[in-house]
Image (cartoon, helix red, strand yellow):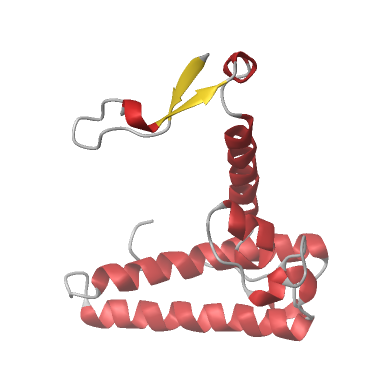
Length: 163
């Protein structure tokens, strides 16, 4: 019988023998705990889906990264918001992101990079740009990209924080 470390002593980072799990020889030969491998695989798949933006993830993707999915996704397993929403709702979300980006940029420019809220504003700018850039190709692939966004691009504006 072998042991797998499930915890470490936080002060020394040495294995904590009181928190070790037994694993079978089969599991050891297979690289460890199959449940852990399965969780890791679900996590990796979820992270790939998150690259499509918030409208491109399922309830299962939320759970795989220990996030709470919106009720709408919980009630529709295996579906993304983009698959569930109509074009009007998608357009509303994209317009909201564009408006949010404009507000964050304006405030960041007005307050400057040394203001106490600068980091928060900078992360808002980065989030909005990444979200729009990720959502457009995903929506296009589903045939659900609103016409208003067919040729839309999010450029880096002068003064935007570096990503």
